[in-house]
Length: 401
Ligand code: APR
Ligand code: PHB
Image 1 (spheres, helix red, strand yellow):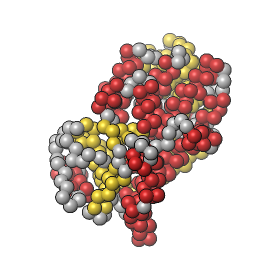
Image 2 (spheres, rainbow, N blue to C red):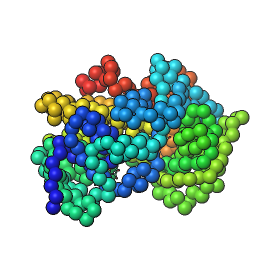
Image 3 (cartoon, helix red, strand yellow):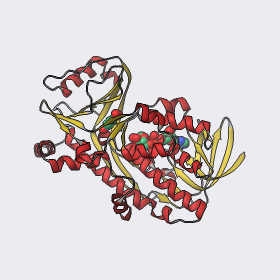
Image 4 (tube, rainbow, N blue to C red):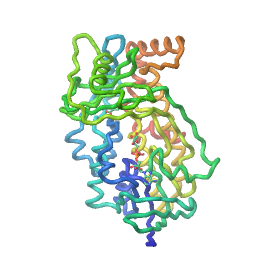
């Protein structure tokens, strides 16, 4: 068995693990990233793609902003569709100038992997049986290219997503779980066709929610609400397009179809495991919390966690100052719960819930009308959608918990 020692062992090479690796490497901290899947798999997963300004700023500071600045689509508003009408929420105007950027998470992962392979901590793909043995004086074992390895570290970053091993390594009873499941899922497609809209369209329809997003001037990303038990076989292209036409319909507007290049179904869940620190193990991103994708907060939360975690780890490992690590969980959870509420709220507002009673349905309809007719209600949506700044006075308030 080969043996190695680093300051930080990072489990998972999603956006959270990869970005953390970059930030630590830039500060001279030694790290290793262990990833269960292949590079091709990590670079081929189609995920969401709406970045808050704070997320864009962090990616630029981490040296992976060049392609994002060239290809990212900057938006100042979103459309909300219901009862056959389209309404615009002017996010930029309502938030004193904040914009959002459409750039696929897949592209961020590719940019981060390329930067790592050029100059970064060791990044090992296709590692097997990663096991975390001790949360206090961490020792990990894993298999790579047929060889058993042991890795000792001062700290472990659990960035291994919702199904990873890090959260599961926390002793029974030490984690408090809060969660919600939704009686629907999202079917998402990528289509080789120019987007039929300049900004994203979020649509409520009695048949179910639909979203028109995009990836580039020639690639559209679209979603429809489906039953969580649905299989892809039930959704041939004609049925998907027919549902999109109907749910996104608005007088005088047409949706252009194109060849579908990717299709998948994702369940919807809200989940928070607290606290996010256990001795030397720190959880970040989907390993600690999941939001339904309606508010596009998953990636942004992962980046916010990791930005704070990198700062805390650097202070502890190079300056012996543990205050950041001690404050990490509480500070992250303040932002996490704001995003939990917003994502749950956007989801409830826009989906057709087969289990909701008539009273709940009237509340939903009334709230939707309020959001498109009151500046105060629209501003609340806009501020949450654009995201709370990572620094500045709002951040200080969040950090105090
Ligand atoms: N060992 C090593 N790696 C693992 C293991 C394991 N036992 N289990 C999971 N992984 C890897 C996964 O293969 C994946 O590449 O951990 C990575 C976790 O990445 P993500 O799931 O992308 O999670 P995160 O980096 O927190 O990013 C959060 O991604 O899932 C979306 O909606 C989410 O946008 C959000 C963002
Ligand atoms: C996406 O483009 O994938 C996307 C955009 C906005 C969302 C969710 C997903 O709210």
